[in-house]
Length: 490
Ligand code: ADP
Ligand code: GLC
Image (cartoon, rainbow, N blue to C red; front, side, top):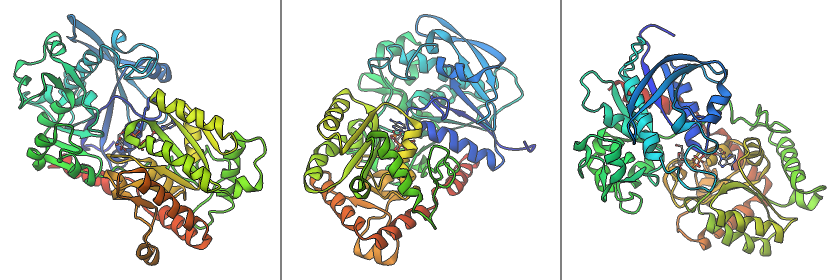
């Protein structure tokens, strides 16, 4: 590390490949690495979940803190780990009563929020704020603390009135998750009373950790320019639009990048065959065949020829899953399409897709669960990628699908609108088209977009051009990492 390199402390609740529930995890791997590659000196601090500690092996104890929890003081050890996938040290907040448990970082086995989430993430934020002030006297004082989503919203708040503090940056990855807790948690956690105000963290009789991040951070970012505008409106603002509008002077929309080393169809270790923009076939077809073989013992030529729609994602309302459920039976009746879906989320959606697959065993293939290799295989093996999100702060899957030559069908919102160019007569002609965008929020418009896509799929030359334009897009971090560095320095 060069002397004088900018020191940046990342604070987050997940990071690929150690803990990941969605795109947040991907970004917490790829962004700090992009900054590291540009000479920044990074530490990433994560909660010591059981699943994380299991993967880290030998760790060094840097020190410990006693901080206020819900019932009194809570002890936390700070561990430092080196992991082969990370080019910089990881710091782990080891506090067994809060984090050493089986399962998901945020919810229990039944999908309910952990009842002590307020305490878990308040303690995590208190510790992160102490680390940001080098309270362990490690001789590593960051210039910037960059915290992500509601789980870390209190970090900037705890730092706000400290005299010798680093600059604080808070990124909203999804405003729909506000980290709302009742006033009783506020009292039990002995949070500073001056936060209890409409100008502070108070929100409708309780408090919001996300709001605290927005109020107290020096700079607030979100993950696409489109979403930065949308969250200042009542339609997308979840009651925080007024606040965000009044903080527009410090609000920045910076598009996420993707890690092109991990998401690269010409090197991806999860794929049975590799391909690139200059030679898409036969590699892509081999991926399609392997994907079909996972679900059908012997896919015939008809199955290989038929358009295969793919979907990977959280099965929640945000993702327009109900539109997919309504559209698929119509498409099955009027065309020869197949669908392959990988996802998990709301039980109702999981059950409906499982039932659909049972009704159409030759044409609808559903895998409920979380499966990183299969996610890559679907991006590569499908012909068309469905992502009709009602709102999408950025979205990574559509960028992965573009890079894998699998044109996406998306709703015109947030990061989807910022990254996909609709195939119209004009954009097909000037060679800028990359996918299919619909702009009316209903099933009919979604179906129309898929039908347009299927029409073009039957025209191989046009289709190849569309795939190639998508694959040529540069969604790596080069530009956005530069924008973050500029923001940290101002
Ligand atoms: P979000 O963060 O809202 O879920 P993104 O498109 O930003 O949406 O990122 C989703 C990430 O999570 C992608 O890397 C995607 O491949 C991954 N993902 C989502 N669901 C699954 C799943 N069931 N199995 C494997 N990966 C998944
Ligand atoms: C959130 C958003 C998603 C975004 C991801 C990474 O999970 O829902 O749109 O891509 O964070 O920023």
